[in-house]
Length: 220
Ligand SMILES: [Zn+2]
Image (tube, rainbow, N blue to C red; front, side, top):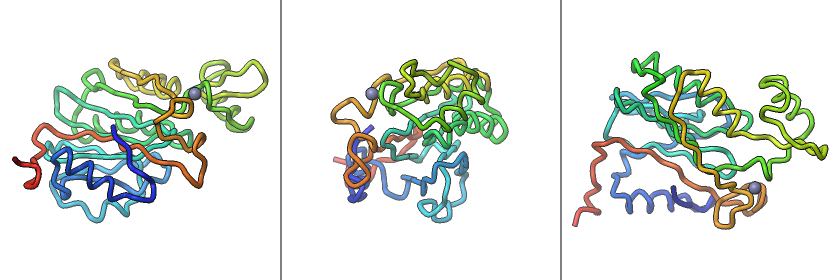
């Protein structure tokens, strides 16, 4: 995971160069907090950067898939047996997109949930994620009282990681790794809440295939 200032997306290009990935093998979406997922096949994707969606999946081993986050969770899925992999951007609105990714991996690639290893990257933690009463109620209804909404002091806090773990386990995933760092109270991590709408930065999360080629410029 690496950092890229919101207003200077060329930083994404620099990261890609540092990783040695050719720019035409690196993909990003126009993220809109949806549960929509794009599958990359062998056809050249049509202007993916303008496509509104929040997850990408592929069997192609020559590509690097990226999402940007600043409190929302970056979630990587890898089917070690079948080779399919992908990444999703999951905030509160898009909660469920990771489980949707598992479903699409089963349907499109024949992946078995028990072979899919999921990594949940850094996002806002329950410590800092105070939410309005309506949002808390929405999650209480969906997940059950006291499961993903906490806050005995009367200020509800949402546990997005727990919500995702629950949905992934229900989808049959057995291997789930979770980064415990809270973006909001960990200096150095990008956080919309801590940094504010005018100044927030973004972190870039990525996953690449085993045959990602090295860029010409990166070859010594
Ligand atoms: Zn925190």
